[in-house]
Length: 130
View 1 (cartoon, helix red, strand yellow):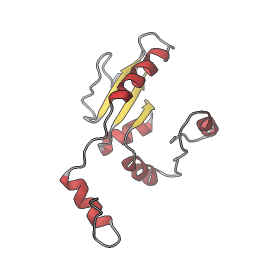
View 2 (cartoon, rainbow, N blue to C red):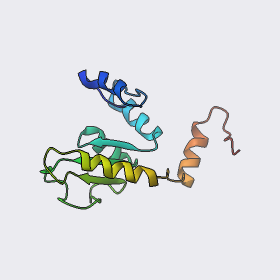
View 3 (cartoon, rainbow, N blue to C red):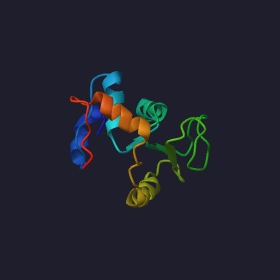
């Protein structure tokens, strides 16, 4: 969980590790380490989208003007998928859709740039290819 503030204690009620960090730079680095970010429309959603990280954003029925009223895609972030409430206040349908999509989710394969960045960041300059 990346949850901050008083609600952070609620993260213990779901099967997730607490990976929250204290500042935006560390948060960006942490997001890049994750396979997928699932969030509501918060700064975390926008940061993950801006970083090009896979992010699924849950939107309430009367979402902000930036988001289309229907559909999974957004012009703002190509790696973001949108999940809309069908009925205001009802998150059950959104969660059911996400559960079904998670069953199909596969982590994106690394690109050549990812491999080069990993090589540059490694301590010894080598990558374990096993």
